[in-house]
Length: 307
Image 1: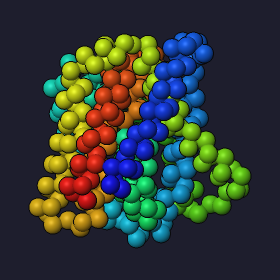
Image 2: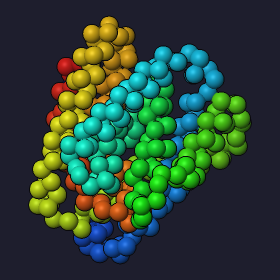
Image 3: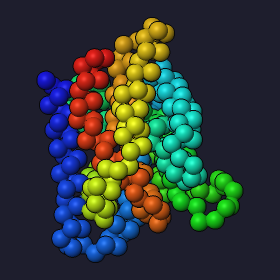
């Protein structure tokens, strides 16, 4: 019941913000081009603050030395997920950019906003701390190669390392340096950054709802491949990891952390970043809406079976 209650509560929080975004668009409270301003606020201010705060708080010498095994498993899960994502994306889409969206979606679940809240609500702060360490490699991918791949390319230029010279990657580097060095920062600055980062996920849901309002639910519901992608993300991929880890007789805590990180719905960045750079938000909006609705049922089942 704790799993079910915590999951439903978190889903209600998510959909409250999504409904707010939908209302703001539907009633014309905000202009239609507000989505561009919101998404750029997200990518240039709020996400960098969230990234810096995460790495500053958890990327410390003490954590790296005591929890190194969690990081090793986190890296392994990330690499395998990415390889699976690349393979599956080729089956789901022919368009190059759409393939990147599917690759990202299969490789990374909503392990941060959704995962953090569910872990905290069910298991408390102690496991949440371990979960943060375990998901550091996922954060590293998301805010480097992951987000870079979601930026629509306006031409056929080859991949360049310049894509990493952005506020998110820079904040990740600065956060890691500050965390590992133990650099003391003014309390007001740390609080300001943390509170700005806390706005990221709620505003991302508002943005998702705002964008969803531009489409009919019928249009989003017709994205048949998204249903299959959601099933793979919510059930099949976590099952594969659990079976393999159990066969390897892996520590139960690591299995628990793996389930928490991989059984979450499809992430929100497939809406935020295409919106910020003028890309197609239809696939991301459909993924966010459908997978989060399905997760109300799947997460309690997965947690009950394997945790």
